[in-house]
Length: 614
Image 1: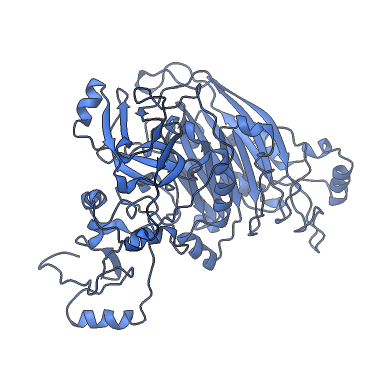
Image 2 (image 1 turned 90 degrees about the vertical axis):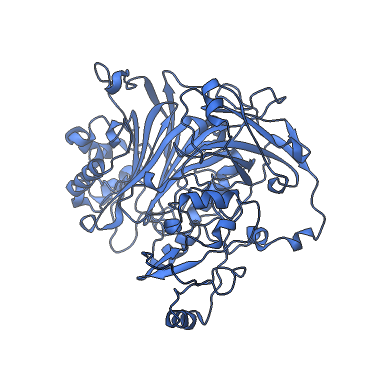
């Protein structure tokens, strides 16, 4: 597991972060997961509005860099300028379950999110692991405030489920970020002398965090590797020189990475299960700063850990069987088998991804896993079967992966190894007769949003993002699928058997966006997703008491799977006479509406049913 922390100081991302992520070394092949914590990402109002519509620049950068190495974004959470991203190799996705996020503000007495902590917790091969990214108060004299804020974060962040409800209840916790601890007592001249003379050990005993680890009960059990790299704060931007401004701030190790293993408990845990504590070990292989990055007044810090579990599950909850190659549409048949005890849902679905996809919403197409005999197949351990329609299949040649998404656990329950799709391309010009839905796929102006209440294939129930700050975009859960030499062989990969992937993997960027489905019933969305017709995408909106809602009888019911997808494409059209039309509609006794797309029908306003409560 690689962990990175960086206070980026509102800077624009650099062009290359491969050395920061250790992607240019042989270590990359052994890394299974990467957690990246950022602080002070530009969160001015105009930038936040843009990031609310489009993925922020930093997340885009890391997804672009990591996807060719087969890392998929498992989950992300943002609180103003504090961002946490967790990536994993695609074949580990079925073994990453119970993914949840949380965040806690501590700025301005808990009302402002410039300081605080964000977390992603998940079960990794049955062991509960939590990643916590914090930005604590600055300045030398605020050590006690940092202690109180950290205690507040630990107390406030609570997760759902029978185990590991608090951060410290997890089997393993990684705590990192701009913790802002400073060097006490020593003056700036001696600190700089120790740095220049490479006698950093003379500064360790005056480091506030080192002192706190032995005196603060809240830090009991947290471990950290030796600080064998120079202090990472504060530098003149664009240089490797410490602060030369009038303030001349004393250098300090503000950016840190710590970990804690839950101590073994005696006896048996709740429910009669033997506790999993004490059955894992952690070794730190690397702990260093990266002086080559100069866009911020902080230097990024990275650590690589080897985490060994005493035992692990090596069989996914859903095994997917598929042919080695789809050269004809009738070969697009997917068979899958669910393990005993798997909690299937009628909202489960199977997604098709191109090798090198970046996140769960980067799918090509999907099909609902709604087999009529699904329950019987689960009970008798038989294989269920679904088929992709010819229209849903990508044309041309390429490598793809299938993944079974579990709506119950909001995560990927099974993936395949890469397999080949070789279908003839459509005749040139035939796309001109397609509906606007297909053209919007390539529209660079698409919005990247999420649908918190939608039951359409969306790998994240927003109820699992119980943030105490504004709801922000997150990608939760992942989907992938296996491949086999024949239809009778499971393509579900296990940690022991993986097929190496080609080096040059094409990446795709599917536009996606979030719709306000608060007024749409889940059943209607499901019907919309199954509708085989209409690829144009629009929605009718009604304004009632100042609140915009999606009409239940909206043409959304005719949307196609692409538009109901994880990040459907949507173009917004501005109407100059919008206000005039709204007033006119109101005068006529109708609810006002807005035209959301050039394909929307005229006159979307409709008279409300008599006695209907808005």
